[in-house]
Image (cartoon, rainbow over all chains, first blue to last red; front, side, top):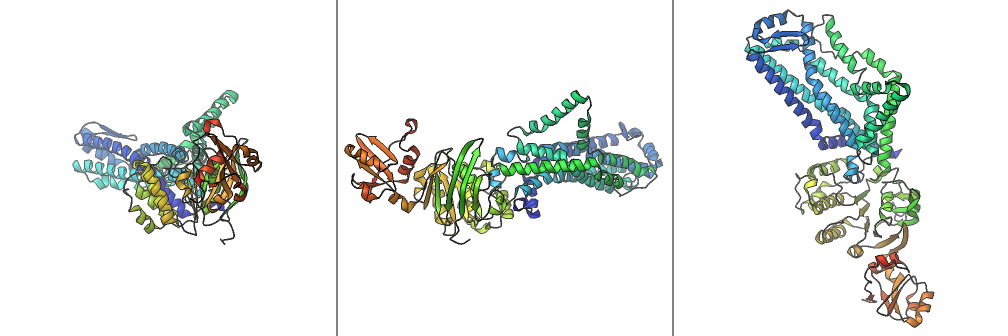
Length: 321
Length: 304
């Protein structure tokens, strides 16, 4: 059907268009969070160098006033434990950035098909040979895949900066930064895990993200309201009628990417539990991921999500404004 | 597309919103190579008709634009069709250079060199954001983009609304002087008849969702004429089904459609009418609504 024209080149161009429009949300916001994290890290480094305070990372703590002693204790730990602690540190850097990125994604989706109607620029875009399917696909991909990938790039920069800071502190006390810090960092594991998580989350939370796009395409005003009210009504009605909260739990799963997000957390522990040395393998249990893909919940979620996206395409096609 | 096949074919084309007909079923052809003015009051159904032609909404009846169903095949159609709907629809957040690169990437018929030739005449800066441009500059930019696209059909819906007279004149001059040729077709809607009268080859009047006149401009003066009728001959004049009548200062003028000039000559001197006169006549009909009576149109004597 020719109304469903789909050209990858057009989608790529329109993704780039989304990037230009949402540069603030995609780049500036994660950079601000990154700056805050860096300031905290520098503060911690200065504290360490000036010999005050206690550093406490994931159960391992030492008093920085007794740095040399602390380093010896640190080297007494198994390398698996050290790697695990650094994995925790790297994920600790990425989680605030990704949490904010998720919020930005939601708002970008809510504006995706609403803003162009409210500023009438839809009339310009519709005068271009770009189909509604291509438009919806590009806006979805930009918000759900491209945006977190940009956030990841920023995250990696912060992680590198934090590791450099730690190395400087360690070097300041006359220890070898390589043995104390860098050789213990499962940098690639965390990176690969994050990339995989982004794609898994884009698939897993499809019905959630697609719902925001549908609300954006439908809402005559205030898309946030149109997105939030129906699920809240369902939660309230479920609570009144069956005195249960399954729908709320389901939504929570979709937001946090449980099933995949959970897998990663568990795997961080497991990867190092059996005395594994530093690893580059992602903390993903692919067996469980595959299991997730073949689950009824995922199947239903995908069908519902695709239906929401189809609804968004239909609404965009049917409405001039 | 052969010259025999009309560019646009509408058969019973209509649109109903909640039981109200925005466009009553209309049948018409628009041939290739014309400059058609679609003229009507606000809310008459002009935009409804154009939105159907541009694939911006669903419709009843049959419609083919360049042989395609516009609603189902809008994206393909937009390779051959361009439109400016309303002023200032360019994305306000974008920089001028970004808009141009985006069009260049998605539109296979966009010619950068043609664009730059025209763009150089404006005072618009490539680094400016669209939202900082004046209304006139935005229209200039949009027109420069559209004129660099080698389209078969260009549709302009009130393209100069709210612009001052210098921009409007320039707009239409460059449109006809630099863009229009025999292979192209232009459809313009407006309610400012005088402004586009000179550039039109064809005209269509829409009133309350209905096409009340469809004519070539060359034909208009043959088909529609006015004559001053002495009160003694009023009955005879009425028998010829005038489309409009106006009495002022004791003189009565009748306007007729498709009545041979020879027959009208019995009443007095047959006068040619301007497009705006015809417009007023067609909009008011025989019983003008008192609240919307504009100044009586000035008639030019035949032969002028």
